[in-house]
Image (cartoon, rainbow, N blue to C red; front, side, top):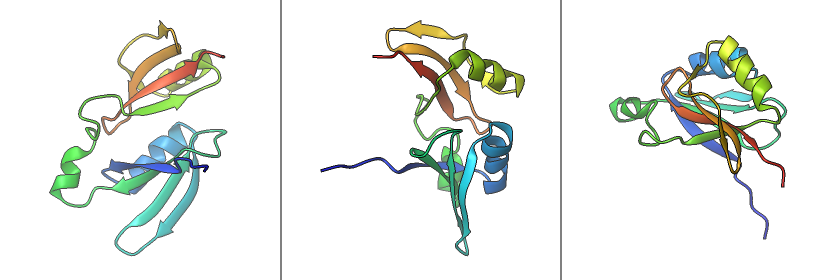
Length: 130
């Protein structure tokens, strides 16, 4: 049996705001943006990625609006790996991305926590080679 995680849904306040941040600012690729009437199917991928996409889902109603930025209960819930931590960390900082900490060297690699404009906490992570 072979399985793979295709995508993770991220609830955001507005499709176009989220596309502007992830695609226009961070350089992610907008792979799908399909109007489905009352909602859109918006799928994005980090630079160079072919799998592991993010589905941007606009909050619909008070319950969903309340979880924007806190879908993981305050924990880091999203992990963006890179092949060059120093390059991407410097680039993201220059673009105004807010990092909560200085880079840390852990047994698994280099990591620093950052937030998107909606309050979601991410790890930027360069994994050690095995």
